[in-house]
Length: 204
Image 1: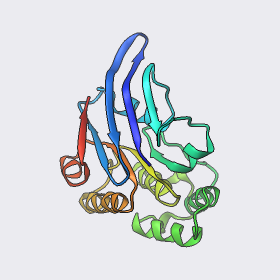
Image 2: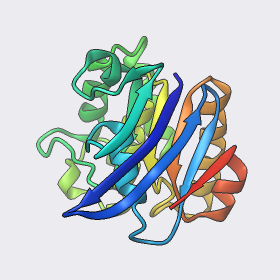
Image 3: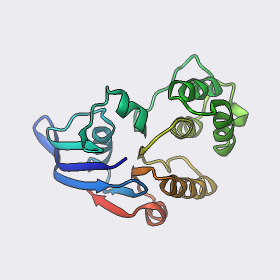
Image 4: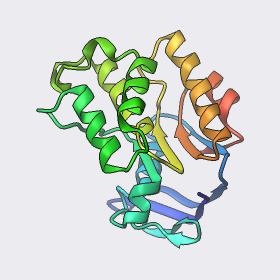
């Protein structure tokens, strides 16, 4: 899935967050959004995922205007944003099974079990999200993206709360996503992750 951002602008209360922003992400490419805290990285990613609406410009998925409510967008875009939420009364493994099933994952149980192991969540698979540490909740957010089909990944600081081993895994995983033809947009403060994964950067 190709993503095209054209002359995008967004403001809060009349104060511009970003203006005249344009870039393209082709299938199998990754763009890193970089900049200081408060520069608007999270806001931009929310616009790319359809959680916020631009004041100006456009976000196109395969040439069509992004509509977060459309089945096509929901089936294609997997995102981890800064306000990720979870079903509070559903265990980790049940949460992932539900997402995999809802999105039509070909072999949902195998995918869920594999992602649980990959992200080190096996030991907490039967816990409810409110009982998880912040790091475990972040890994659950990543797992939620990887148990479902996707053609575009939108990730806000996916390296957060990951140790060195976890960050190495993330670099490898995002490289594998690109190799599978997934387009990736991520905001990050991790220089090693940006260097290893991004084909281009957008600076805010």
